[in-house]
Length: 548
Image (cartoon, rainbow, N blue to C red):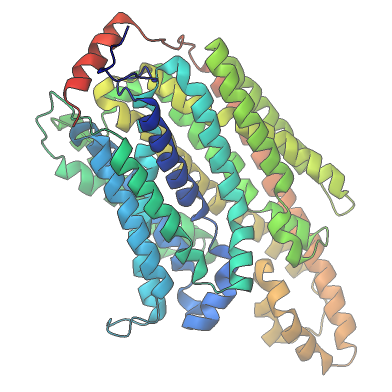
């Protein structure tokens, strides 16, 4: 029994916290998770205003691409460094960089002393923001693993997964509201007060656990080859849709990525303290979870981006409603993340939940694949709920399973592996499905195109994503032709049919991929979640001696 002078701890992980410390730490972690998740999607709906303000239409895709590049590379690097130097310094640095970069993004175009224009400023600052966001994301779930024992983590991981799902899907709606009622700059400035609160909470309430037994030899070859592998890969996948898989630009980047991957594997096998310990993937749980996270990212997250396009382009839902289209999916994610997290903490069983989640996602994808122009909105909502419920059940499974078997000294690297592979998988999915959709769309639209279409109008039909924005220009162009508006209506109907078939192709292959995912989850080894043991008590006591 603790005396009056001894602190009363309420957590039983390696880092033990008192009740005030737990409240402060969880507040900071939740706010940081909220900001990092929202920032991946909030800028999309502000696109037209940003382009109009900074006059950078030709470079706008880089606003999203540079954030993806920098955040994806940052996750494994800084999660691994936190294993050697402690979580708190890197989490604080990442959150601070994120907040400062957010302020700079909001000021882009007004910083006249810089040698680059407003769009260039925004792209550079988004890259810095991505580094901060990647640092926060890679370390956040590892801190949860440090605080709670494996059997306790489920309910907390479930809350974080629910919050992540809410923020990722709610981002576009928030971005649209801020842009309409304030300014596109508010999409970045909104991070400042909440980010500052998160930094303060972690600074004052989370203890700095200093790791032991590390020689602290930085793996410079690992840093260089990881960046050399991931950056060309993501660029190739991002540009594949625009330039084609066989273009010199894309092929050269893919070849570079493959060569650098070989060098990465070689350097990590020789490094004294590798940033990606390859020995981790010999563990069947970590190996299967990494593969399953990649497949989930490709099949599920690679598809979500195309659901609003189907609703608008095929079912005729207005663009003003697009921010709310994914609400049923969102509700499924939130409810099942919380339920699933609680269930794991009570039962210690994650494999059955993983199988059930993958079955539900596969079912949702099959329902999506059956949609056509006559599909009711109720049917789409039901399909979204089914897929969202499965997605929510799966969210906490990978992190819990990996942390349960990972050695303490590599907890950060192991935890970040699932985040890293899911990010790569979603990028692969978006690129591959985008290529499939556009190929199907172009082939069908070209075959059905009637005679008499002005050559200058054809470029507007190359990308169905932009048709709604340029429709007034098309009506003006066709209005001066004999039967021009009737011809335009015929073309738009052809677009709708070609787009529907292209999206059906995406949903079909997503369903195939997610059915394969069920097999991966059946292969997942069930290792009982550890509760607190005597050896853990000894480690915690030792760790407590090194705090502050």
